Length: 180
Image 1 (cartoon, helix red, strand yellow):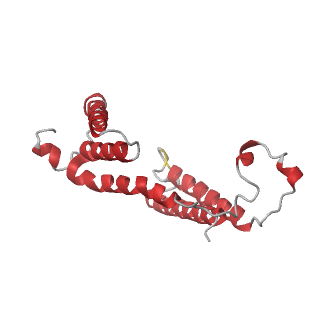
Image 2 (cartoon, rainbow, N blue to C red):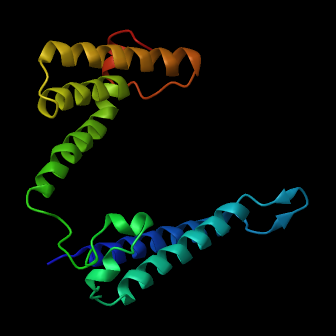
């Protein structure tokens, strides 16, 4: 059984790995001072080391924490964020029944939408994602979902392409439609 404790340890180790890769990559750009100030890798190196240490701290904290038995009287004294979790919160199953299906119902369409961006562009791919999500998850009608998606993506198009002047990926479809 995968418990919350296992997930916390793996998350801490993954975070430590990200920090190590960041610190290692920053060394290619120099991590010291130059005549003009800090080198390009100075701050990324330090941030990478900080993330590495915090990831290891998370993994150690949850990996070395033993199972605790809390007296009923002590449960009432718990305050702050810890009060939101039960006393045995680290040793309970990580995913409840049906949770993986709910996660997949959001993750899979998001991954498909991201995979479609090179062909359809950001606006069409995200518009399709919105339509799918609104119809399946929110149980709204297709015309309402289409209206929301068109208005949202139209607003994003104006915002990024005209106001910010930051062109987002257009894919293959938008240039064929004459939208540059």
